[in-house]
Length: 226
Length: 254
Image (cartoon, rainbow over all chains, first blue to last red; front, side, top):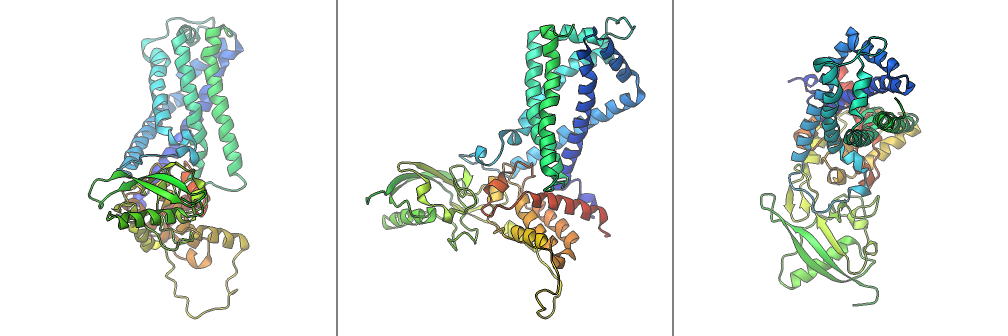
């Protein structure tokens, strides 16, 4: 077997896949967060529904939706492969460990945080994706667009949903806090000048994006946007 | 008991060999001077065990001055104990309090099988080195020291990477038992200097291949290795190895 063929099956290659899919999913978060933030126009969802209509009908976006699902699946499968290998690498566990002395808890808990995000994702897809793609959005807004905004309002009128979404966004924030900067380290992009910038950018991204997302169910439940 | 001496309880991992199951055994360490090193404390306990006809605790040690990397002890949940930037032989008993219970375990990794008690077999590191951790250029006679000019920064970085003593604390500290810090230090110390650059592509490909074959885990960039390394080897070396590995994979003409 040539060495080239071995890159993706090597330990470093597998981490590259985690990093590349991770950054791709981050790019999705940016688009998703930007468009959903249209609800804060507070115009009864007219702007938001224009955005949602565009996303639902643009062929490029629909094609990217498939790539997105593939990216999520690859990220999860590769994480499982890596986790199983890592378990095998230490067959007898330590009796006492003091991880807090040498690393951040969230950097050691990416699997747990990722699982929480996946559980949220299933609920989230059932709430909105299944409705807009399959079961159908029941009403139309003043512009004649499918009123996805109304679906949001109904969903976020339930307190348990708001709590689940906020907890999920906290998980996402910690997942990103490690994942964002870790991807660059995996790609070998570690530089005295730029690494502090990447780390700062990653930290702000990890706080701001999940915060904006979390504010959506909160704002709707509290009636800040109508 | 002389003034200021300590009495401690040790919970130490006892394991006959790599095939037997291990267990913890409790020992009393009485009259321990706070100025003793952790290994000297073990010497005292072992002498008491031998004189009472019991089997002493097996542990690795050699130079006892922090440069050989043999003293592999996982103390209270951390490789080489509670202090940073030191090996077990450089850890003094004044870092503990009278009456403390100290848990001592071996490095735990599939790639480091237990030889006996706290001594583990780290020949997996040797095999990684044999796979590429050398320069095979025929250098001929001794040359003038400044024949090859090397920038101060490169020289410093290479030297910092070469400070690795191959103790395995990085593997022991890593939640994934990854050997990336060790291998990247060895890759870096050679790749940074002109003599080592000639073979840098084969070196990184072969050493990473051997690392994976030895059964070490995968790096998740937690940074525990860097924090626990007695020589403070930087994570920058891991990034450098990742770069070198990608570059070698993409451009190697074989």
